[in-house]
Amino acid sequence: RWYSLAEQLEMPKKLLQYNLDLVHFPHFNVPLLYPKKFIATIHDITPYFFPGPNVKKSIIKKLGYNLVFGQGIKRAKKIITVSNHTKDNLLKFFKVKPEKIEVIYLGIGPEYKEINDQNKILAAKKAYNITKPFILYTGVWRDHKNLPNLIKAFDLVKSRYRLDYQLVLGGRPDPRYPEISLAIVNSPFKTDIIQPGFIQDFDLPLLYNAAEIFVLPSFCEGFGLVALESLACGTPVVASNSTSLPEILQDSAIYFNPNNPAEMAEIINRVLTDQELYINLKNRGLNQIKRFNWPACAEKTLKIYQTT
Figure: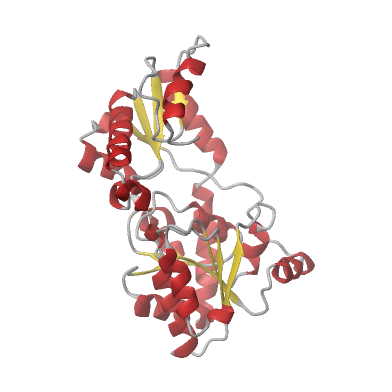
């Protein structure tokens, strides 16, 4: 299991069965006992700011996270980060040497594109009980994703701006964060809050295409891949003005203060009702995604393998 003692003990044994020149750990949970050369990808340091209830309740888990993370970045020959924001966090909080870190942006899969088959889009909406124009979010249901404030903003979109939309919250509800489900239950517009659960990969491009806008209200993001996927499908994005999102999205999104649901609602309303702005954002988004592709990511990663 991830983050388990067994992972720490068994992974080094398995790796040492092979005569490996270099191992790439694509996550921070590097096996402490692996003695040979490796590099690591650090997507973000979200657990540093939002440790989650399991870590908060257990000093052992907190010490374990700090030990694994700290030793991993210390012992890695090279560190790959997916944004300059994450690189800056490592420099600030963990005193890593700048020359040790390489920033490599992620890519967007070819399945994320504009879809013109309206029958497929209508079928996807029907499958998820979506009956109105809708605002989309998809991702984990955790505290750093700021979903209670998104729900408050949606309430204002309905009550203050009188927009007859649904809010589709993709992702599995997480019982460790009951405040999200409670915010839905307490919403006067809860019948228009759709909870499809985990959205399968083959349905995601259809729902991105079907949505009017995509909202990413996070307090903390290392990259924000879902926002780029939405842009690739021709659906404008409104997002938090925090962490990596302005770096990755640049002028292809409109930003809000994630701590201010009223501002979030005002931005959502503006994008939904200003047709010229909407079209401009769509065009900017389709241009912005050209900066992100998997072949470039692979080539830059291979270069690190060859020079480490």
